[in-house]
Length: 120
Image (cartoon, rainbow, N blue to C red; front, top):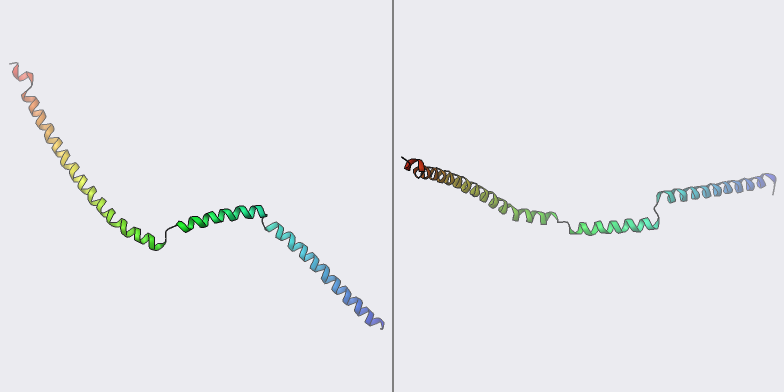
């Protein structure tokens, strides 16, 4: 083996050693980043429980079809309530007029029966 072949082997060994050292540094750096960016197991369990709670609540949310069916059932009720409201308002106006007439009649009756008319 001559000197240049020996140098090439040492040079190749140096490259392999450098790549190995670089890979070690990259693995260590990646682990540090992962530890910094990921949560602990306890935090993961807590978030997992909260997520499960949200999923359970979302399962109970009505679908578009169910909401449409509910809307179709509510629409006639809304119409009925509006009609009933108008009827109640009409009855209120009628009772207000009756109250006004009764008040006039009572005032008229009280004037007829007032003691000032009998005193003379």
